[in-house]
Length: 482
Image: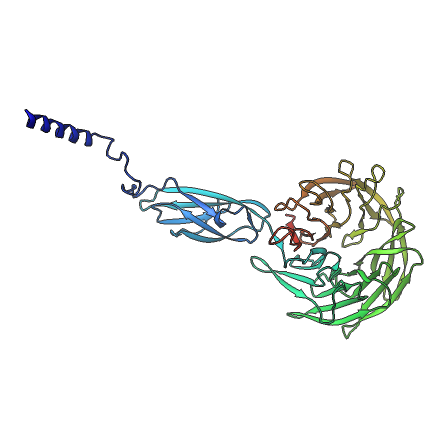
């Protein structure tokens, strides 16, 4: 009886062990083989799961079992050539700011397909180093491939030139041997339309340095002056033939002309007994140029326009707003279309209510006798201290206007933002807002603006950190108008 009972127990155990559906109970995953064609439960990961991509080139990690071949797309429509499966793949994102998705399609040995995707926020930018305060001033070539950048208040005592490469921007740091601490070299920058002539102001040293690009940047000249703050603001025309130099405290404005020996010779100098000049722009026409000079006299602003020819320079027109407020800094920023017909002028400390410094900008159009007001855009719905119009730039064809509020607190104190408008006849229509999307603290985003003929917008944010919080490296953000 004892043997029968033991036999019965053994048979029952065997039966339980062989019951259907129970063979994998409590077995580790790696004990049982996965179906050799099963590609489920996979994923792709861009740059290790990072939130932002600062280069077009990204690394995609492919976690897909049993895949034999693969292909990729950034729009789920146009696919790369199918290739052998690999755990990692380097891909190039489109040059489009914002959230981007990479799609991976994977195939097993019998041709079954499965698709996985991952997203990352692409930010195109130019950076240099800690404490560069990059973006205090910016200038850009016509084609948008060369950007000259100064530091905020000239704190870095250097200038930076970025040149667009296939998938990134190359940086050249420019600092002459005779610059000393506190000279504020790089306080202002100007660049010719072809990206060949570069001008850098050092107002404490009372000098403007001239460089020519001949495969590398070569210093051609140093222009010095006895006038206080010579080089506070500088400008050049599209060809780099003329150089305009402002001396804010010195109350002078000077025009230089390049001669055949590539030296800039003083042609015109204007003195002001009261007015201080803080912004200048030059726009070439067929056989002459217009010079726009922002002035502040008795705490009120105006923009004087001169006509510059080979025979001389004389006053053409003066723009003074009808509501010319004291301390509004009308003329702090000026931007002009390539044909000189449309002029945008910022007044960043304009008050909507008493002392609110919300700011505004004005749009003027040229007529036979001068310039008439098209529109005034006020920061009515903003917050105190936004300073709309601190920087303003208009697309050379006049289609879009960019106006900054570098002290706006939206998302963080003094984070800043840039507003985008479309100029439609006499209407200035709000289109969009740009932000430093990877930063939520003090950036001064929009401290400086420049836009190319091709719609490349360079936005200076001198207090945005580059590598670590509060490193004051500064960033120049790049946006592209499609």
